[in-house]
Length: 248
Image (cartoon, rainbow, N blue to C red; front, top):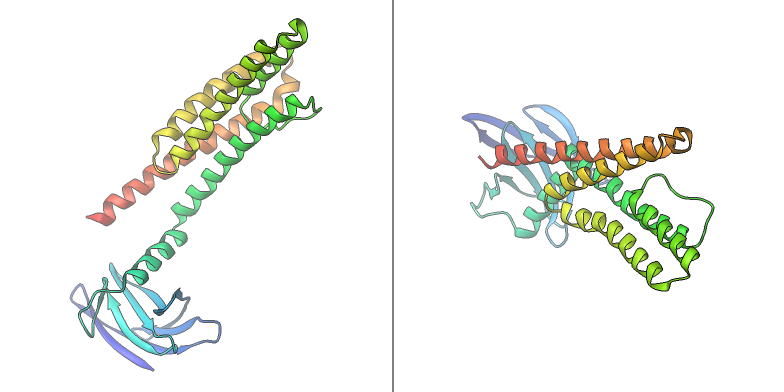
């Protein structure tokens, strides 16, 4: 067993490392309270065990032989006063982001956004193949443009009409793809996608006036996409607020 004393906000805390299990998890006591912690493994550095002690970031480090090699508080080794290794700091930040509920919700929201974009392209392909099915979880405007292009070609046998219509349909679908790619770093593309999706929903509602039953599934999925994008915007705002607080 290895013991350290750390000072957090003027209060002394005792941290005791008891053992490292075969699974990699470790039994650690903080002020006598025993808990089991999972490691963050860093190549050529060892295993790190982040601990939560009020607002201070405390990490126990094990060397490559799974032996206690030091205690890190707020990025500094207590024994030597040296900063934590860059690879270890990066691994800890990545681990914290993965475990952050807001990050998980953001990832899920972006996954839904991507699925929507992919299925929009898939529907364009299905229309070109004259397939008897389509996916409701997609934009409706690009497929409509593609169908109009095919109809114009069938009526006039004009290849330019077909090609121009298909190019416009692909561009309309690609707008969502560009917005998705930009949304990985910014929030404003999600807002723009929400506006475009609202317009897309209004169009499908207009088309459903005379035959609502045929469009009810599409309307339900459009409502889901609108809710998902709105929720993603809310998550991004909460993340921004949390980042501002943590940087103070």
